Image (cartoon, rainbow, N blue to C red; front, side, top):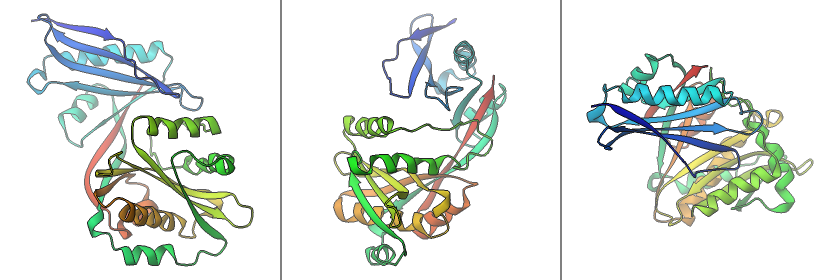
Length: 293
């Protein structure tokens, strides 16, 4: 039976990206696979696309994956992209499939989880209340307060040199509007955004931040988003300090929350040490592969 590749209209738009989509079907109309290509549109990442491709296990090796990939790669070229990235489990059929079609491994991520019931509140409070001369902690829920919006936006440059190994990731460009849009997008889908930041007493600027997104019902696992410290403020233990406060707040405010999830590049030794010290336990790894167009 022949395979058809059907372009779809994907309504999932964000302020910084859009998606193209394809469905693979048998001639009978039975769906057997899909591909989504996210196109990043903001300056600094408008060279990049991200592929999410799946074929039903019973239909693998049928040629559907290759046809979907061909369609997605052609669209990426037409959109002027120079790189396509995709994630897979190490050693999985997905990684082997992508590697055989020109993708190369550029990054390995370790995923970890902190079981909140095992978090030692006394130890966390000890970290939070330990002196960090010249700095103080602030925290807010949802959208950043107006009086901190400019300095919080500037602090997001702390992520510019986040270890991404050989990934052609580019640089995420932030302005106040984008910061607000990102927070409102989380709110719109019903989740809760909590931010802890370290403020430099010398000028009132934000030196670093950490973000945690909690499910709207306060149950299950929460997800860490960004954690970063500006280069001129590193080496003072601010990342551990901020993250300990985020964990403390989650433990005390959400009694039904099970755990906190995070992922870190294997090459990001500093953040891995912080996570290990706070009790995060590795769960699995993922690799990022890249196709250079």
